[in-house]
Length: 261
Image (cartoon, rainbow, N blue to C red; front, top):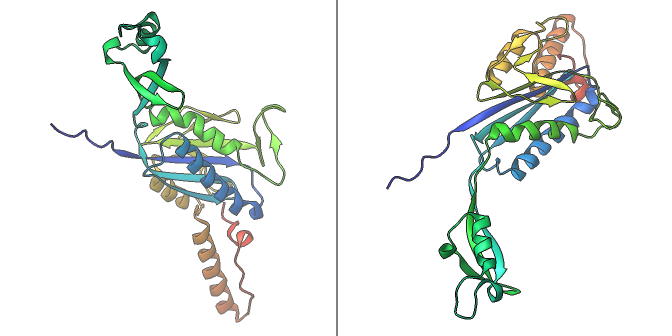
């Protein structure tokens, strides 16, 4: 008998596009988004083999999640029913309580068994909770991951009781396994179109996955990885110093990396 084939792994690209976030707030927001996603995916049994990476630029927070399963794993559960004392009569025949429990669980009464608990013996049966698709789960997980971000100060965009965010959200990208997800974040519908640099790039860039996204953003004036932005700035400063025979104080940090949105 063949063992069941392992479900293939898929990847998620998720981006929140917004008005410029203060550079000093980006590192924490990036880290918080990663932690939120890891926690929420774990709670939905979707994190066993996943890797979550997050990136930021002044007009965007981005998550790249690899190794997601196509669906949650099915889970076998033990469901307990009435105690033995009321489940069987004096001659060991199942009572109405046992028959009702079997009917409710949609199993044959003959398949029921007894389990020992702290309160005594109880009737029980096995049930399989069928896992939902990752696509279904992400429609709730992704908005929650954004709504749970904390900021030194924030504003609400869909009414006083609605989600809060540091700046107005202008676009949302949510692409799973090459296909856009149907969901909303703070009233903004997700799709597969990101935006380039405010002045140097396109305002509508279709993307299929993270590497496609990163490549197209770079072509449109955006370096999405903060470390690479710092490296670019450092190289350009060094070149400037050499050309002008000047000296400068080397700096690193969020303000330095926040110039290429």
